[in-house]
Each structure stands twice: as structure tokens, then as C-alpha cells.
Image (cartoon, rainbow, N blue to C red):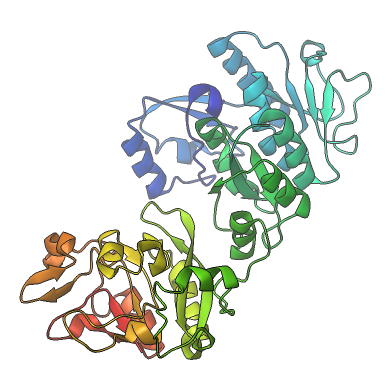
Length: 421
């Protein structure tokens, strides 16, 4: 129903509707609301608080309600040439079946022990094994895996064989996946289920094989461990310092690490990171820091990730030929760079791997009222209060301070981007 109407699914409590939902209805400027389920599901007390044109689609039980919903769908778009058959006793199959329902234009039909004649067509898809749907003389093509996760995978292979996107939802939390069903159409992507803390190797192999690179994570149940696997296609210990890989050393040599440097690769460590960008999307990052602060830097960025602190990008300074101004102008957050303090002949703390700059375009170094880099001049005005600006006693300041890092924003010539040990 949601995909036919290009409408979101909004969940409410049985007897009340949350303020956030009412605000969303206002933001969407809705004209009509469909309420799915009877009094035992959504009470009149809740419905009365919804001040819009309303249509309640409800039967005597879930199967009757389902038939009413199908009738409404077919009234909108015409009769169906087939149906997506799922068990009405478990939720997972009905959610992951949305992708194939969209692709085949076949409404989802809930069944238990029988199926009405008008819904029993050769063009049907039957989702789940016989342990889930076991009706004699049932027509259609069966799609199933050995569990709900692998069933979602088999459906994805049929419904979205060429998509480079996937919606990832918990196999343990039905509500998250249900809320995401309309995204299947928006992103032309299947729903793939995962355990909260374990990414099935078959799912991972499929993602790698299909080169899926765009992930929409539904809800907060899916852990960082799973997200790490999705983004890397392998087991990577994000936020854990490791020896600098040889390919990174090669990239740094003669760039951020000149031949005459007084510090060596053995004094530094490499940290693979995850962070939220300005669009709220999870991105991979990487940073080089001094070995003696590697673990605490990992903890700092893990805490920033956990609170979804926005950092636009975290790339090695070598991506900018070790040009600090170029990196800052691109709002790149970075660590080690064997260089002098701007305007002096003294080595920067960055040259020791003991300094980190965060969102530098919006948090400039200011000298005599002028910003460095010059592109940051509009952000000399600290009254703008942008989310990614750094201020004393804000979230990022407090996290760095907890680990004993000093902030450059309190200096005579403030360097708002800069934290050092």
C-alpha cells in the first residue's frame, strides 16, 4: 500500500500518536491518511487525534484486513496479475517481500492454512519454505532460504539483481524494517536482513559480488560491527591502531613524510575510522597519529561516531599533496603532517602526530582577524553556531578534553579546528 501510494509508513502506539508523528504529518502536508488495522491495533482514542481525512482499512483479523488492503490497492491501480504470498504468522517474510512485490506489481497476500481461489495464480511468488507456507495445491514460484536472513537474500537476487544499493535492517526488530519498506521504491533497493551483531557471510559475499556500495541502515539496532563489514567487505577493526600498511607508507614518503623527517614510521600508527558526514551518512575515514596516542585517538573517534558527530571527511593529508591549505579548504579533517607551524620555522604538533584538525573550513585558524585558509573567512564570525562549528564545552570539546587534549580555540590567535596533546 505504501509503495503504491508513494507514501511513508508511520508507526504509532495503540492508544496515542506521538508528537513527532504529528509534526511529520504537518511537514509532509498530507491530504489523506490510511489507518491499517482495527480497534485492537489502533484505538479510536488515537485516531481521534489525527485531524486529516482518514480511511480505516480494517477487518475482523489480519487476513481480513489484508484482503481489504489488497482491494484498496487494486481499486487504485487495477487488478493484479499475481500476488506475493507470505505467512501471516511471522513478520519477517512479509517485510522483505516488499522488493519483489514492487518489481512484479503483486500485492502481498497473507495466508495461514488456506488461500482463496481468486488469489491462487500461477504467476504468484511464494515467500518462505514449507515450514512457513504449506498449502496444498498452492500455485506460484517459491523463493526461500534456510532462515529469514537468507530468504531476504534470495528475494534480493530476483527483485534487484543489478542494484548497487541495499536497505539493511535488523532480523530481530520487525519495526525498523517495516518503517523502511517505502525506501525500497525510492532507492530501487531490496531489504537485506542481518543479525544485530553479525553479518552473514552469504550476505557479505553477495554485496561484494554485486559491488553494492550504497547502504541505507534502517534503525539503530544494527551494530557498528555489521556496518564495518558492509563498508569494507571484510573484517576491519575500525578505531583500532595498527602498523602503517606498506601501501600507505609509499603514499606518504616524500609527501607528508619527507626524507629528512626527525620522526619515523615506527613512531606512528594508522587508524581506520568510521564517521557520519554532514548528510548523516556513514563514511570511512583514515588518520595517522603518534603511536603513544593511537589507542586514545581511536576511542575519541569512536565516541564521536557513537554520538553521530558530523565530520565531513577524514582523509590522509597526502591526498592533498601534504598541502595544509588545500586540505583545510576542502574541509578535510586530518592528523599527521610533517610541517612547520604556519608563519614560523618551528615544527607543528602535526609533525609529531600529536595534533588533529576537525572540520577546518568551518573552524579556521585566525590571525589578525584573517582566516587561514582564506576560504574560511566567513566563519570567523563564531555567532553563526553551525552544527559542525567547535565551541568550548560542546560535545567534541568535552570528548577531546576527557583524554587530555588541548583545544586551539582558546589561544590568543585562535585555531578552532585544532586539538593537540
